[in-house]
Image 1 (cartoon, helix red, strand yellow):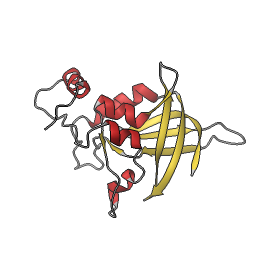
Image 2 (cartoon, helix red, strand yellow; image 1 turned 90 degrees about the vertical axis):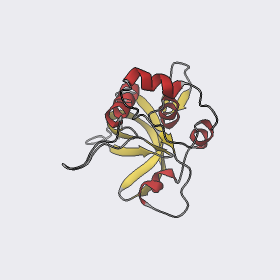
Image 3 (cartoon, helix red, strand yellow; image 1 turned 120 degrees about the vertical axis):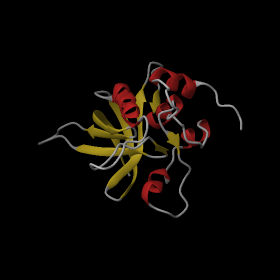
Image 4 (spheres, helix red, strand yellow; image 1 turned 30 degrees about the vertical axis):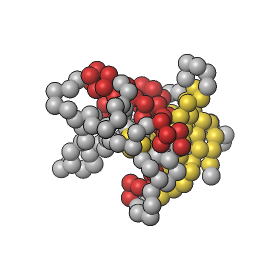
Length: 164
């Protein structure tokens, strides 16, 4: 398991960061880290694919939150050439807070329960941060309501969820 401190160099999707460390000798090390236990709307890959609703807005939220800031991180595992783990950002309160939890609270991703067997995107859930699973209902956020603005989506996502 790898862990350490890095600066967020880029955000490739609503749940994936590009981290850069300090240069010792030569170029600084880089790591693409997908946050474990959460799934943000997917950006399209390929010319015929279609973005999921609010995929770009989720990415923009994470960019505004973390780009250029120092984070602590932990790599929990690797699958299919991707690194999965957790990252923490110091917030206004001074205490580090999980980026996955911040994304889930804001409604830009959904929590994923740990996978049972399976593969593919379930690999991201194998090490789901317990605080994300406890804090956020395991239901997808449905941001694709017709005619909903960005501000309306945020207000709806931040409001307390009613039991079914």
